[in-house]
Each structure stands twice: as structure tokens, then as C-alpha cells.
Length: 113
Length: 110
Image (cartoon, rainbow over all chains, first blue to last red; front, side, top):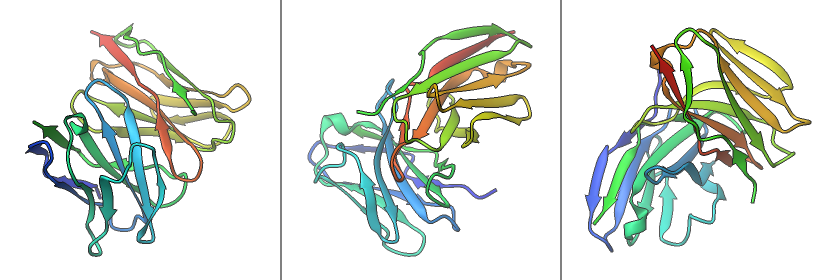
């Protein structure tokens, strides 16, 4: 069964450093997403991406965040200068169309120290 | 701020019983509604999706949608201990953004 894959599963970084989280969405999906979940809190939408550009973003997705689809398979989230409060699980998701069910990757646990 | 509300629980049901999970949402324009299951430390796993008013059944799961009341629910029949997890209600808001509720923790007691 096709699945969304994310790497790494766990990333520890020092405050102020840049991190790149990687995702390989399901191959025939057209829409890609990043969500985050701070420990004990709800899943929060960060950004959606379609046709090589951001289609929607939340207020959380400020200038320190960026997304990119560098090739035909990978979808990345970059956090430019990490803060302690960026520590969370980051989930990548993809789906086939607007309003369709989205499938989540297993997540990357980001710990900023 | 558009909201998706769920009772955080825990909701405890005996094995074999029906578990009923509820969710309300604030955006009247929402068209797509999802239930995800999340085990501790794991990613959300899609259980059901529903777009139209009424009931949708898939195995032991039934999703119910009432757009007039802005209410969506999930029934789990013949609950099993393996169903113990947090159930996330998610609602499509706007074009692609999906807003999640805080989740209801379900405990199925053997």
C-alpha cells in the first residue's frame, strides 16, 4: 500500500540552527501539506502546496519557514533559525485533490535544545 | 477563528460496547469531514471521511454528519481494546486547510 514517508524520524538541533525535514508523498497525489503537533496539543495546519507553489498557509508559517519540492518526489520543510518552541512532531501529508482524504507520514520529532 | 470542538475524554467503554464520539465545528462552509485515529506517539491514521448529510458505514465504524447542526460523530461498534486511542475530528476549512479538534481519548476496557 502506498504511503507517505518522512526522514529523519527524530532530529535534535541547537537553537538558531537551520533544519530541513524531508517527505516523499504518495506518488499520484497532487497536494502536499505540513502539519505540526506540539506534545499534548492538537494537530495544527502549517502549509499546503500545489503545482509547485504554496496554496495556503497558517499564521504559524512565518518567514522562518519555507517549503520546496526540489525534484519529482521529495517535499521539504525548512526552518531557518530554530527556536525552542519549534520543538514538535512535524507531519507531512498528501492527497489527490481539494477536500479529499489526506494520508499522513509517520512524522519527524524535532527537538530544539 | 474557526473551531473544531471535541470532548477530550477519556471516554471509557467496556469491550463489545458501542463507543460514540462527537464533534462540532464552527465553519458553515465546511464540506469535508474526517475522523483520524492517533495512537500515542504515532501519526494520525484515517478512519473515515464523510461529505454528505447522513450516515456512512465502513465495517465497525459509522460516521454521521448533520450540517444544519454543524455536528459530526463517529460510532464504533463492538469496541475492542485495540481501538483504545485518541480520535481526531478534522474539518476542511476553506480551500485546502484542514482544522483538527483536540481529540477524544477512548479507552476500551477488557
